[in-house]
Length: 214
Image 1: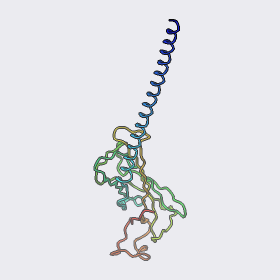
Image 2: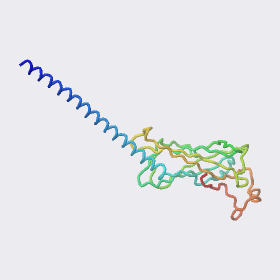
Image 3: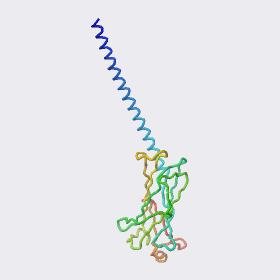
Image 4: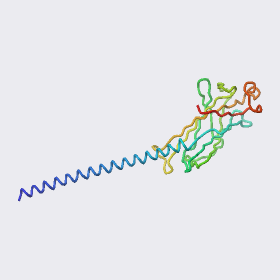
């Protein structure tokens, strides 16, 4: 009887150990599946944000003009075109401006035209969104003529982050960066001087001439 009793205890112990191992393996498998599901979901969200950021949102400079009575300042219109049928949530577009000086780019001030508070995260519906900026270029900037006589070669760096609608998470943020180039007419050079070197329709010298990406 003792022999059979000992065998039963060993059998129960073995069964208990096997059950414990099985539960451990099942739990480990479940956790692994859960982690893979989370990774796949996160990757899908990232790909969706990337599609929105790089194929549905297009920041650019629409126009730039002189400001009466403020010769060192230029009124710049920044536009963000949104092609997505669904709303895009993004940070307010930040800008930096540079003038080519020799082989270098010299940063010049750029600021909001209106001193208004704006939300950190903005909702962008399909269509065009306009933002007003002011670029300040001092007369002592030693700019370089770049193909177009008399004109400054200006680069505007535009950056914004496309974020999920639900919450701002670092791993789910996609940065949308765009460098826009343009010719900008210096306020201290007359139209007549530029017209001696370049021809324009009706002899009307534009303040800003857009350039292709480069």
